[in-house]
Image 1 (tube, helix red, strand yellow):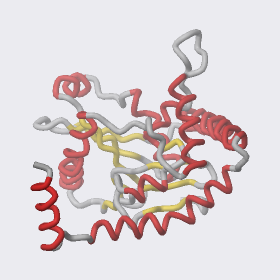
Image 2 (image 1 turned 180 degrees about the horizontal axis):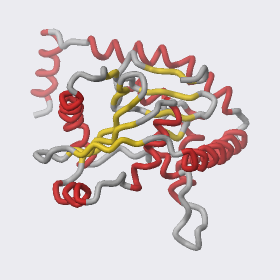
Image 3 (image 1 turned 180 degrees about the vertical axis):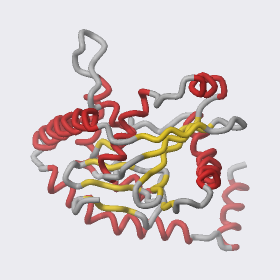
Length: 255
């Protein structure tokens, strides 16, 4: 990894600090937006345009955009199965590689970052995707990286500068499908150009509000330690007998 890369590994994914370090930038799962065109004569993609303005809003306010994707029952299923999938991956690797689990890896120069499911050894990474049984069996008959995941995998390779990334498609009780992906320099170049154009538009929106992206980023970085402390404090709070009695009293009063 280069000198512009920052690895955040003192907190897990899907926590307030993780949300904070991702503010104001397009991340790996959004990379498929960078080259998207609109449905009408290849015009502007509405989804991409919305994400540009969401990023600007996050930089300006330090808060996550209200309409940011929050998941559905399929993403919930994926989170629930991910630990089992990673454990099975380790078993299938037969101890040949060690895994590490950073929350987020950011490239400050490119103004982007990724949240890997795991880093594998010194050269690789892992992305787990869950899939309904019937769709999984179709994919297994014709193994290929689903197009909707290709950009995310190249983003992971670009940010981490690793040599390969395993895509593990998981659909219990079926044996998972593992496909190893290597850097696609042409696709990566297109994505990088798309990222530069995307960030330039974010710059314009932030400037319209009389601020610069750099000062907004500095404010976000200055607040990170406070967000981490608040999260750690929230994890250590326990309900005392007094607090439990107060909760009970509140419940009685509402009847």
